[in-house]
Length: 144
Image 1 (cartoon, helix red, strand yellow):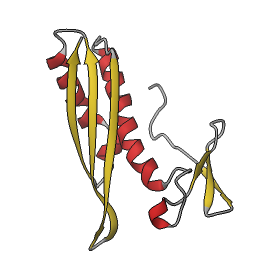
Image 2 (cartoon, rainbow, N blue to C red; image 1 turned 45 degrees about the horizontal axis):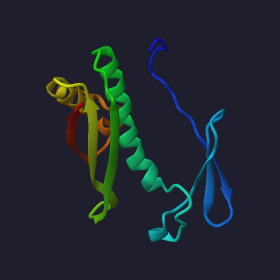
Image 3 (cartoon, helix red, strand yellow; image 1 turned 90 degrees about the vertical axis):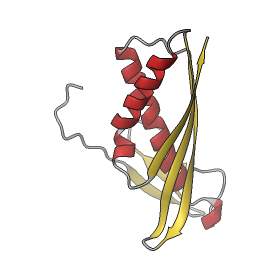
Image 4 (cartoon, helix red, strand yellow; image 1 turned 180 degrees about the vertical axis):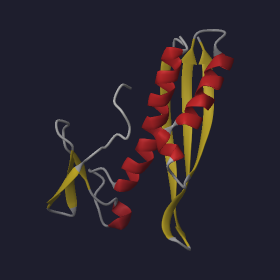
């Protein structure tokens, strides 16, 4: 990262029929988004709720990838899923918890190193660090 801080990120929205919007940040392709079915939307587009939990999941992956590369860990496979819990609270609707399940395949003898590096990635994930939501991770490491 040679760019001085702070970094700035912009997106724009344009309204479309059926409570749908296009999220844009040129030159990236637009993302069709709208409310989830629970709030009158459709299953065929991304909801803010799905984008929210996806950003947590993606941030951990990218942070781990960076740390693993610098530590010379040869990751063979990384797969994860995340489940966010949206609840009514005294402060209104809020994601109260996000649970990630991560499965990583690494060479034989690298399990302990992998667990250490993933724990470091969890501590450094800028998205998780920016949230009130409790983020937990369940990890399975396979040595191959």
